[in-house]
Length: 201
Image 1 (cartoon, rainbow, N blue to C red):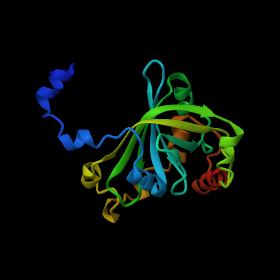
Image 2 (image 1 turned 60 degrees about the vertical axis):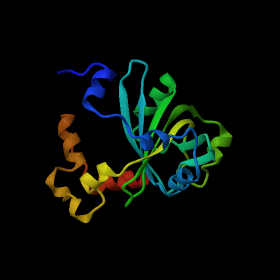
Image 3 (image 1 turned 90 degrees about the vertical axis):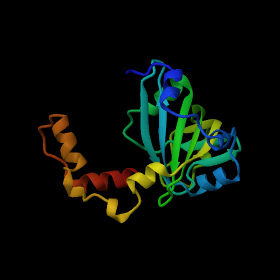
């Protein structure tokens, strides 16, 4: 049966536990701030005006997302592929969702809210210490923040050595994209690709 309403969902799933409801906060507390200071990676989710969604990885040194106050974050937009999928979505809808991770932690931190893109000199100056200065900053106005339980990471064993896949089980990204795009010229080697990426970090 196709489930098409919240009432039908609740016929399949029990009510959320009180703890799961009460843990949702409207601003950063001391634990969320500490988590952000240790996190070098998060997944950024956005949607455009016609509800097409996008999720992209973002990374930097631990704490690269700056906490301005209990309601505001600043994210440097580091160099990427210039498709600008996430940024375009933010311009269209001003909505954002983020899932922060710390290597070795099974718990994650979820933050939802509103966002805007700025190239204000004062905001960009806050990231002057980065090796490559961002061209723009994502300013986040927090609406929801809460810790997410570790079940997904416990199931996947993501951080364990035993869970690491040997990279040779699939072609390199370069080889896959070369075939996906029906390229005919000389193919960049893995070493060349990694060196190019390293120079663009």
